Image (tube, rainbow, N blue to C red; front, side, top):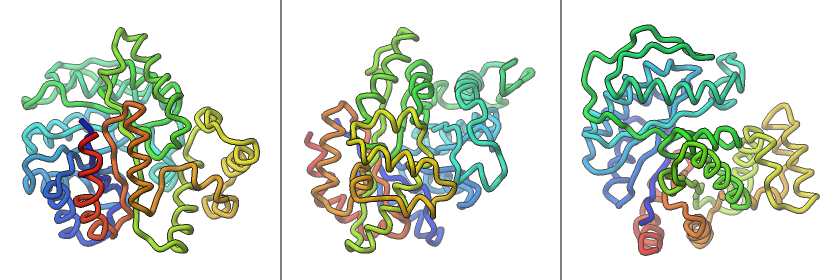
Length: 332
């Protein structure tokens, strides 16, 4: 069965409204809420504690990275939140993005595969209750352990990323993968890389949850076109070349994407975005387009779909999700 969730990644409204959004997500029938740990937003961990206590059914997850938080601290945090939520928590690990790392002067792509792989291993072992001695390329632990008993010994961990090595790592080690706002044309490549990793570890592809994403808004055409250029520019600049090269697009569009990738700033990149480039990405402003992309994801076997809503637009989008989108997709 298809599961639909909401991304509350960059919420900028009042805190009480954020909590209300989370409660409403459960009330309208969504299956999960995905949040992000980023210094520029409110600290997500006390917020998730409140959300966990104000809800009873909906799944909860947060995305963090091992460059700003040590994996042992991450393990303690997710185990605590899992207890508060009565076993509804999932952990997302990513190798960081430019919006998070650059303002903190933390180098981008510093051994990302090692950082994620070691983080998954450390988190799993600590949550299981092990005393961990670890000598990795990125992290070292000496007799580290949690001095409380997590209510689950296997909190689900998903990896957030797009590069082939990271996708294969997810197939080998993780419970899932969230690849974000990627074009439908890259899905076959994404699935193939996950399958490769799973095969190496003696696992089946069906054991790994693949989260797809659609950004949905109801902005008027002119406002949406400007918003779309900004979103697509950000995504392209943070996407590895190896993934961009898998897109099955005409030569002219691919050349524009390569030029965008070379830009030094998002403002510079926006100027190069054309309609042909923008429409490749799953960012839409109509109900029909949202449903159509969701159906395409489901055809590819992706049954966990995160709806990304621009901050402040939740109250406009929720009734549409409840009345027109969720009923259409839940029967597929």
